[in-house]
Length: 108
Image (cartoon, rainbow, N blue to C red; front, side, top):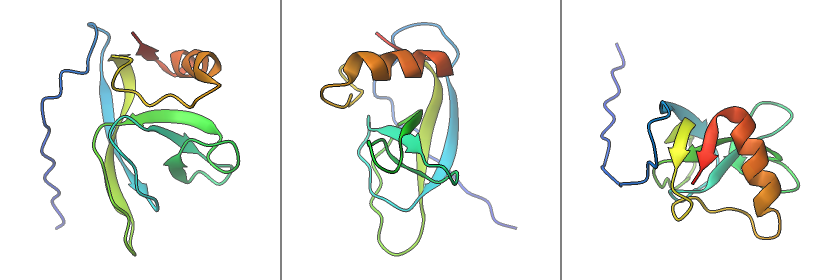
């Protein structure tokens, strides 16, 4: 049996009462807390960019460092999240916020 224990750290990043849904995702890339997680055409997760992980999917709750095997990252799939926590991509902030809103992630 493989039991995984996840520790949550209080960060004060929630901005309202919209339900927060979190899920652990397997990544093959390092991320910082607040990075936007994107998904590629094959369903792999990584840091949102304009080349590979082009569709927003979630917000990274914790930082992870990739070495040689997949790393577990706690990702927020829904919720009202403070803008100061989220690392919005420069130049496309408004479009990214709109895409996240369609997923149930509201940047306040």
